Length: 85
Image 1: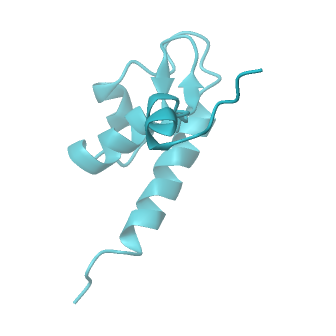
Image 2: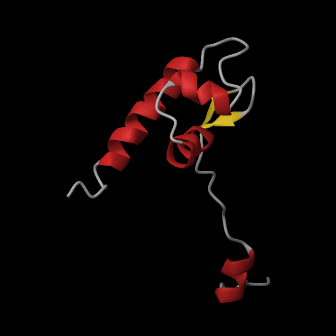
């Protein structure tokens, strides 16, 4: 019986990659990271502004409440770390 002894090379070659995003709009393939990117880099703060940058909510529309929640939560979370003085 052959025993495999784990070493640095073994773990390096067999790393498990985590997916750190969630699909918000299945119809268009838009993720929470796409929405956060629009908020951070394009100044998006509302659904109307978001729809100018990503094609969200144009098919079934079931994603709009989640998208608005992500916008609201991301803005609140990021504002806690901004220098106000």
